[in-house]
Amino acid sequence: MDLVEARELWNPEPGWLNTASYGLPPRPAWDALQSALAEWRAGRTSWEGWDASTGLARGAFARLVAVPTTDVAVGAAVSQLLAPVASALADGARVLVPDVEFTSNLFPWLVRPGVSVRTVPADRLAEAVDAGTDLVAFSLVQSADGAVARYDDVVDAARAHGALVVVDATQGCGWLPFDGSRADAVVVAAYKWLMAPRGVAFAYLAPALRERMIPSAAGWYAGEDMHASYYGPPLRLASDARRFDISPAWFSYVGVAPAMELLESVGVPAIRAHNVGLANRFLAGLGQPPRDSAIVTVDVPDAAAKLAAAGVRAAVRAGRVRASFHLYSTEADVDMALEALV
Image: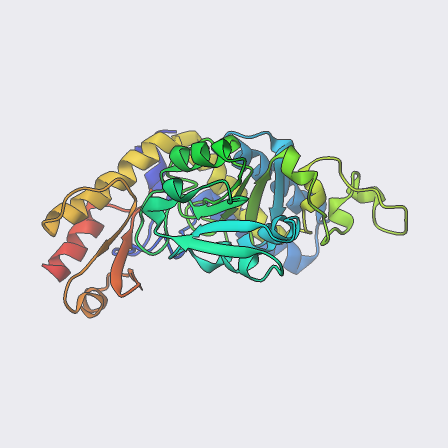
């Protein structure tokens, strides 16, 4: 499906420029969710059909970030998926993080006893990696201002010093192409650019990293054969990344699987060109140079109030208006915002 065809699957109210807070579901995702809810309400089916969406979504995520499906765990939130990574660090480990990192990729390291955390400006992260660094954790795209990380530079620096790499790709996965297999862990909350209901998160966990981790939240869904893992010992966990799964919120996965299939159909490079093109149209209208992100921030006096009065929904982060653009965003949305601000 091309981008023009795909865009017919949304009908949002004009002025939604806040995908960095939450994404809007395409019609197939919304319909699938409503159908599952109707089945639940009437009690006319078993859960296995809903759960099939978890496998479909896991596979779609693996393809989006270019990793094997067997290396992907499913969960509910970024911090939950990072917790066993933090627990696997040795006492005395040193973690390097950007100084304005979203706290879901900061608190798991700070809360770990015996681990020290050093912060530096995000654009200096690669240069700050040294022989004393055990793990580098950063966002692929910064939530506060949309800055895109120098992903390959940071990974290269980490590899040169034997450090692990953990990437929160929540604000990039779905519009920004990247090779997740270069990292040791990639975590994504899916309710933004993957347009899921809340309660869906994914983690790529490299095999070498998994060997150091304990699946302390393991339950029946982490079993090698989940249907044979309902009751009693012995421990019989999956041999791959599924051992770090938690039992999924079925309806959220029912809602995300069609959305991710649509992203795959359109193609992330085409989505990136569309999103960044609209972001740059917005910046140009304010007399600012183009950037390479679907998330942009601007300083305009009384901007939040002006946008609200015009019916434009954007966010305020770090004291600045943050606008974000996705498949369903239009030039008319951009012009609506510019008319309010200029």
